[in-house]
Every structure is written in C-alpha cells, then in structure tokens.
Picture (cartoon, rainbow, N blue to C red):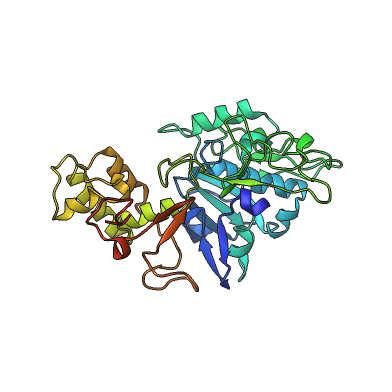
Length: 374
C-alpha cells in the first residue's frame, strides 16, 4: 500500500528492472567536489544533483519541495527506518532551491542511483517534530521569490548515548529553514502509532486514503486502523477522483493519464525545442481562432478544453509547465523508449473517460470527441 499512496524520486521499469525511470524528478547530475559552489559535508566524494518536477502536490494540496525530500531521507537515516538501509552512503543534503537539491555521498557504485532514489517521500508537514505550523512557516518563507534560504546544508549530528541523532544545519550557509523542522516527531515512530487513525496517511502518489483535505487523510480501512484484522481490507481512492482529466494541477495526480495527454498536447521535445514551442504559444496569445498555422494547434485539443478558442493564459501556462520535462527520462519515448512502453500517442483512460489521440479520433470534432492532441 505504501507505494500506492507515496512516490519515490525514480522507479524501476517493471518490464526491465535494469532501467530506472525518473519519476518525481526532471533529471539528475553527478558532480565532483570541484564542480560545487559550496563546501560539501565531510567525507563527501561525489554529489548527485536532483531537480524536482514543479507540478507535484501532495494529496492535501501542499506542494512537494526539496525540504520534504530532505526530511524524509534524514529522518529515516536518523531513526534507522527500513527504507534507510539504502541511504548509508549519504553524508548530507544541500538544498539549492525549492525544487533542487544535492545529495552528497561518500562514494559511487553501480547501484548508487537506484539506492538513492528508492525511498518514498513523506510530507514533512505531518511528520516533523517541530509541528505543522513551524513547517508551514518555514516553507512559506523559503518559497518566496529571492528567499534567503539557499544554499542550506543539513547533516546528522553525533549518535547520542540514547535516542536518535539530530539533524544539524551548517551555519556557514543558510539556516533560515530550521534544522529542527527536519527531525521526525518521536511520538509518530513508536510501534503503537497509527497514521491512518491520526489522519496523516497523505502522500503524492496515485491513490489516496479516503477523502484528503488540508487537515489530512480520511479512512480507507475496514476497521479504521492502519492494520485491519484478518479478513479486513483497504479501499483507496484515485488521486483526482471526481475531476475531469488534467483539470487541476494540485488536485489531480501529476502522472495521471489526463496529464500525460496534456503533456503530449504541449508538443514536447528537448529543452531547446520546448523553449521554441513556448515562444510560439506566447506569440499566439490572443490571436483570432484559425484552422491553419502554428496557432491552430494551441487553440484546440485538451489544452484548450476542446476549443477552438484563442490562446489565453491557460494554454501558455500548460506549455510552460512542461518545458524541459521528458515523461520517460532519462530515456526518450519517441526515439529510445523504455522497454515495454506503448508507442506515442496512445489511447488513454481516466475514470470512465477514453482519451483518444488525433490518430484515432481525428480533429474534425473538438476534444473530448476529437483527439486530445489536436
């Protein structure tokens, strides 16, 4: 159930376990110490720089940030959580922006990236020991334009005689986001704690526990507890249930089929291609509806909610959202696709709705009768 509710930075291709697909990230770089603009934590030999997708939200509507990733990894390491078994190589976290962070490591082996990207990401808002108000205040400050929160570097302190080590902040860099926010609430990791009953079973994954609001999760267990008795069951709901495909950035799973259709509609390519596409859609802003030329595409299809309508802020925002985003990275769906994936552009299904591409439905009629990628 964990990986239904929560996401990880990357996932193994189920059709080819040797292929790792970027899931929550736009990409990752491996950097030497000489390539860094800061001094890494002691014992660091290499660094992996991750850039998160900027359209990811937890099921309660809060945005996924670098601090959530840092909290997840550091708190798991501090308390010896099961998922931390793959993280022993980490020397620290250096956060560069709300959606970009460095994982500093002692050494690099053939499975380093697999190990570093496997843990499921928890929302710090619910699990940190300083409290949800302290977390939200820190996130609010650190997601403002020109924030003074970066770079921020966090490591684990010495192991005490009793209890778990605390997260420490490198005071030579920014400590505007307090290290105390990155320590887990000890009351929430004892064996008797029930996250379902407490209403904090909230992730960013495709399935959610009951009705999730800004206050937390609902009930998804036949007994109302996280461990139902023999014969009991869980019932999860789709993240985005009740909403039209791709109709909300924060209310629908970021990798839903509707969002995949929207990505295909945005005419993705490499980063240079994407910037050119953005310049085209921006130039089409407010232009009269036409049936030909570069603007016609952006006036119809799923991105125009059917259309045809003039290009407005909605279409421009959609194209901007997907600039630099490769759905199957580090592979290329068109030219070097992951093993077992269906060819572009596929027929897609979301809830009871069938999303047909133009190759199947044509563009004579507006979406959703016509193609989503018209």
